[in-house]
Image (cartoon, rainbow, N blue to C red):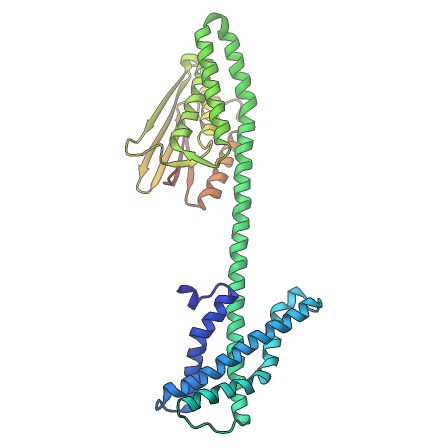
Length: 359
């Protein structure tokens, strides 16, 4: 019943006024003008009847008048709320006579005397009506403002989701040409000397692209799926680099890799950077290591290499772009609750911290 105190729609605002705010205001007016607590309940019922009757009439007549004005295109949408408030205030004197009659009926049923309605009663009634009307439109305006905020948030989320999907699609499209080109060159070099190895590369390449195509339909998938993609990518690259490229994958046994969710293609660009800019320029090659561990309610993932170090490769084009892309995707998906840090000395280590999510 939280909405009774903070209504979010005009209908909820009317119910809230009728059952909460109107009774409270009626009690305040009763104590103010009745002066004592003697017979408070009966006097309060009379005041409440008058105010509720006035409110119901104002809402009904105001809605009918607004309908007629809209039908004849006499209302500007930008001024609708002001028109409603103005119409309600103008209707107050007109609805008070019937409201006082309703109050007289209740007073008679309760055995209370009823004096002739005078100008003082009308002034009190108008003041009460102005307060009720102002309160109603204040609550209604707050509700509309909240709805606009929610709609704006939903629109932002939709745009962010579209941006995430576009980024994943861009990553997929970016990875396809040069990886495929390198893999086919490797296959061509192996097909005569080591046909079995060439066949293995084709199978790994098929596995990789099947996973990429499947994953590109979503923005997140399981940690296991991400690791499988990385393994397939590294196997293809190992066929090209041979013994120069070694890999190591270390997953915390307390983590269910099939249940934990991570962004699609989160690690692949980082691993590609490690191979291209860390291991490839080094004559003796090196090792690319992937680790994942639980740190309280966070998932800690590191991608490291013992290559030449960040910025020491002869060609580093695309390194910053890949990292910026990963940072932006983490920001969009986790609202600042995820982080990416880089450490580079003898090799490079990239550490990603993100909230544990279920796939």
